[in-house]
Image 1 (spheres, rainbow, N blue to C red):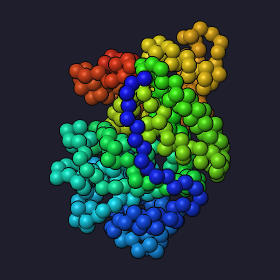
Image 2 (tube, one colour; image 1 turned 90 degrees about the vertical axis):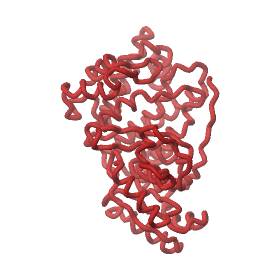
Image 3 (tube, helix red, strand yellow; image 1 turned 30 degrees about the vertical axis):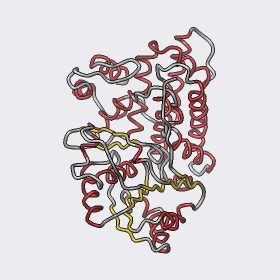
Image 4 (cartoon, helix red, strand yellow; image 1 turned 45 degrees about the horizontal axis):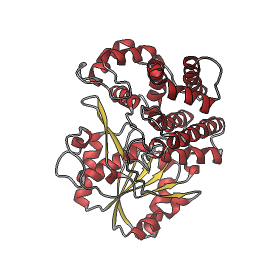
Length: 389
């Protein structure tokens, strides 16, 4: 186990109709003027928009709006948000939505305290030194951004999608009502399930020894998400299943499941290139394609962890260690297929001709390696892409 710092300050307001309290919550914190940040039309169709606006008005909280957040949130909207926040003297940002809205809000929050282009944070040229506080009303169980210190933004002009990390952007609070996820489509529910699992799996498969405490938590979370995932796909109005997915979303990405271990997020780095190149590709769908392929390529390099995963999560004990490890990977891949998530590039509509340019961008023409317990050069990336074709 390596040295670590753990920080998870976000206050969670969990349960039915908790979103109705948002105005009084913000007022109690003492904020004067709020940016209400959200996607497009979904929160208006469901009535959540009216609920939020009424709560803010009833509490006497002044606000202005910025809508239009898309999946794989864009830097152009972030720039517009930063300009608006500075002009209007906003002191708090309320994100109503999922990971895309939350990440867009975080980027605006950092940009509001800077005198340069907020894209420099995602390029890792600048590091946030201050940020406006952000609160969340969560509408989809997926990204875990409601408790995380990460912020991923895309630039369509350069086909570049990248994240930065800072404890300054951990949300002040997260309102989590599982009923708000009832209307999430089957496909987006599946994407969310994959994303939740991946945030834990990327921490689980590490080369750090003696992290049994974190891995035991991780295994419990993974098994709970698989069970709840089947249930939620079968019945989208299963409150208990939706509750499990929502709380798992939060705790899969606040650092708890990786305590004491090195964190590489290798598969995320591969996927960011895929959805950064093809904006139509949902992040969860890209991960469901790439994780099994990556695992098949590297599992022999970390056989102990893959065997442990297969035994403790799926109860696979028969065969050699290599056979058990591979069986665990295939079992997870089968789960992705069972919840109707893609597991090949063909299903994403991406041809083999795209592999080389994506691999070149990931490795900067084979001059850098993708970090991980087994680092990937361009040839490795291409091998993984071809396994997933």
